[in-house]
Image (tube, rainbow, N blue to C red; front, top):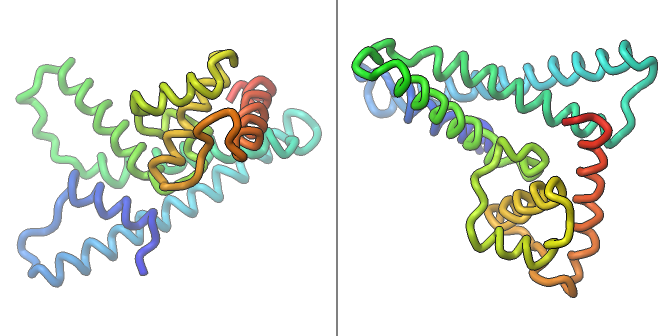
Length: 204
């Protein structure tokens, strides 16, 4: 069974790189799976490397390991950076350099949009992606309305994470509170309070 990260890489590879036309359909599929598994393994290895690097740096700069809440934030950021690094190199590094037909400013905007879509797609299978909303789809209007219903009086940083947490749960078909009387409302509120405190402590 192909793991979610490899599946996401396969989609990106098909969309942005393509397959060798000289291969048969069977060989193309084998090539796609092999390349995607290799890239996914690179992502996993890079995550481990960058996670170790950022946690070691924290100890060196502060004289003690990061508290658990800060570790979570540091690790999430390291994983996102690792994914972006490998995808940029493996996927966008293989794009043909025939972009001269586009004006420079248009090329830049399109390249940035492509990177955003790639990053979001790669993180799509991560249930904790809401902690770094830059890795998330834009929340739907209905999700924003629900967030207003649940936490309208909360600070903007809280609501920023809240709307992305709700959107992620909806996308993943997972339970989420629909009113302040819902059984999940207290735990979601606590989870969001923790994330806001984590951001306040680390700035990330």
